[in-house]
Length: 113
Length: 112
Image (tube, rainbow over all chains, first blue to last red; front, side):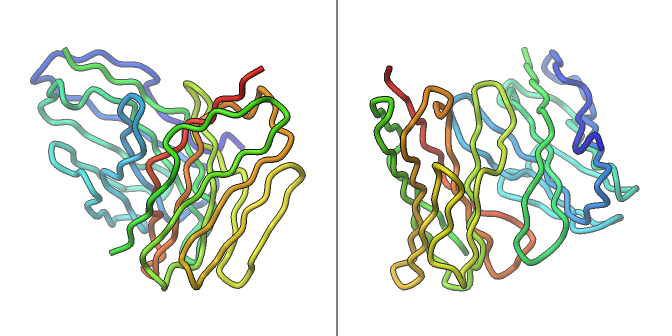
């Protein structure tokens, strides 16, 4: 099992450019999450999904969109990147409700200049 | 909604000593409390968790205690080693069940 994987690992964007981050999990988990982590800071939830075809806003959703067309994939889009979106982005998945471990991907380091 | 506070933000201990990190939560419906360790440049990984029907859980040098009445839970690391240096996050699973509410993190420094 690969667990949770993220593509790409690193990316540099210019202000105004767009990009999509891909998260994939092979554990058949229902729930998936996108977090951002700024240097020396904690985890902030951007968007999450509780099943295929569903998405919901988290704590800091502005400037991001998501899609979950397939159960194993969760995509995070930046339509018009801003320097404030420079961060490390982590995807995570969880089996379902009832309190379970969240499994994290290795992260994507994004720099917006 | 649920709010999780974590203290201290930085903890420096001598190698071999014990370390204790504390978290408080606000939602009495929360029923699952995990602790994650994040080494520099790596992803967060679960190290131990506890459910609301248990008061204490141990795994070798680490333990977690839960006081539901006071709404706080703590991570205890004994006989600290250099590889324990990392950022530790606590979290709580509120009644909604679909997300974790995270503490701000504690940077643990082990002094040789």
